[in-house]
Length: 332
Ligand code: ATP
Ligand code: MG
Ligand code: FE
Image (cartoon, rainbow, N blue to C red; front, side, top):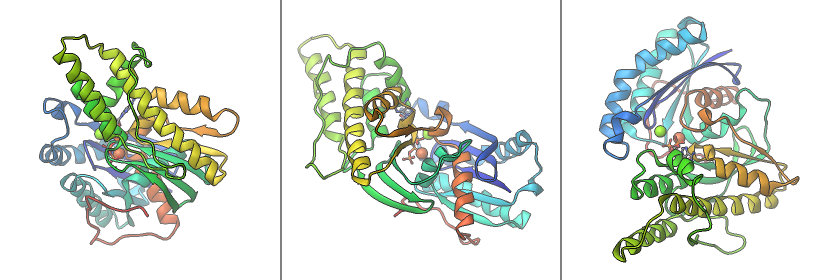
């Protein structure tokens, strides 16, 4: 059963062909990073235009790489939110056109559900588990009881983890996107050099907050500049990263114990962070099994959308041609 997945929620135009929900036949990702880099972040209007220019070529290439014909597709799955509405509309419109032309079913997928399902690709991993979804726009602790059965256990009250990485990278002059650059720079630094505070909530509260940490780093940088003191970028990056990772790991372990799960999974772009992967694995000890997708499936891609779409279809979910794009779309 062939699912063709389409993802255009932010700055990656991606089309993927997946067999039986889990086997990746192709996963073509056209990243717009270069187009947005000079602005230090994603420019929505440019993103939409780029998607429009790329989508047909990316889809063609994905089908070719998979060694199939468009006629072999059994299901079209597309991200319909959350994300940039103009960007999403390109994927949604293309998906509708394709499903109509092929006379095949269409299913809209929630992007965050897609990130979680990246864990099922090329693997026999299955619910129940606890998932820490940490991306550019979200920081959620989600208990996945079954396919389609989710419970939100905690979320950020302000910035997302990825957003914090991107903002601090910009303040340090490292560039965009910030996550991978901080990850790399931090390896050369001393993470105990500066002690940055992380917000703590009451014992049973699984919320995250990263805006106070962001201010603390910015204040530190201003203070050093004003006093003419040195700024060791590697140390700041490492100390900031440690603070984020500690906060993420602490709540994740708390939530996993509260739910009595055996397995903890990571998802979203920040799940590519090496320090987060190591710390969670170390602190889980023999208590939990830790699962994470390969790097390329952590950040935005259409294979995860095809996978989530396939499982939606199995649950009886289908959409008609009134399917629309939604900037905010709730999973719960
Ligand atoms: P959302 O999924 O919430 O809609 P998004 O799709 O823009 O947002 P993703 O593509 O899932 O986000 O992830 C991108 C984010 O991941 C960026 O903020 C980026 O800085 C961060 N990121 C990527 N690699 C790393 C890394 N190695 N360490 C930390 N952060 C990383
Ligand atoms: Mg991106
Ligand atoms: Fe994403």
